[in-house]
Length: 386
Image 1 (cartoon, rainbow, N blue to C red):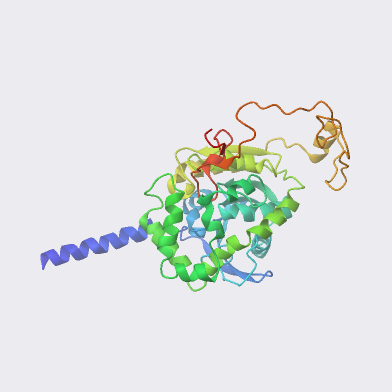
Image 2: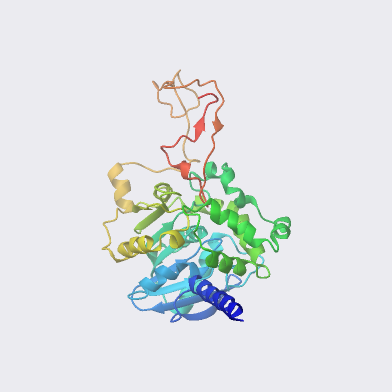
């Protein structure tokens, strides 16, 4: 009898500890479901007072992943934390998973809550929504924080797509849903394990919690739809890229994941980018290194705004006239050593290797959304025998 009581007590304690460890926003957050004109009902929580900051989660997670950062920022900020459409407690419509539409969802949420200008903090697929939001509503974004993910259509996107480590980008559709049904934890474990810098993170309680949210009816269909929309996202982003973002941007990469590549990506689309790296962390920054990541974000949000170059200054100082590709007239003929620029005297010099050998994509270790080895100093391509 005594032994039975001890075993029961241990099980109860384990259950309590497991529940205590699962991510959860502070209970003081208010909650509401807001209808977006784009055809989704967005579940959102908010708390605090002061400058407004919106936190948007990524894939394999939901809004509760922001618990460490939300608890810190709510002391002197108004913190808004929605679930993306199709994830968590938001509705799961059939469509609208392109990031441009989801940016409109966020705008509807902020308008309904009575907030206008905000800082924007995103992670993973949330980065893609954040970029669309900042590009569509640049005058509404005070500061932008992006964490550890690529942006469809923005280089090195095409190279990233060649990496087998991002197999999940193309794993979707009815057959994928059938394969994963009842096995959601196996599927997500593969993603969590591949992209972490610490095999113990996310922990068991966190994994079980997030798995349960995606195992809801329609949850995996909606989750997969985030990836199905990538081709449309890439087309939209190539249009957005024509006008660079001017607000301060913090590009954060895990040392064992994106590292400095996050800033490289953002400098394609923004002119005022600060780089930050989270030491020893993989992709899951809030789970692997919450204290360090929270400190980085807070310091950036609270720091004085740096001087920002303006588009007028950039163009007037250079003395250049910008033209579109269709307006540029390529040389119809040229002298030997002349490329498409029509400038003579340009020669090709082989510095190393045999230019007649075919190149191949080397083996690449990947993070959740992109390979770590996309960073410039690592050899992505090798000639056979090279």
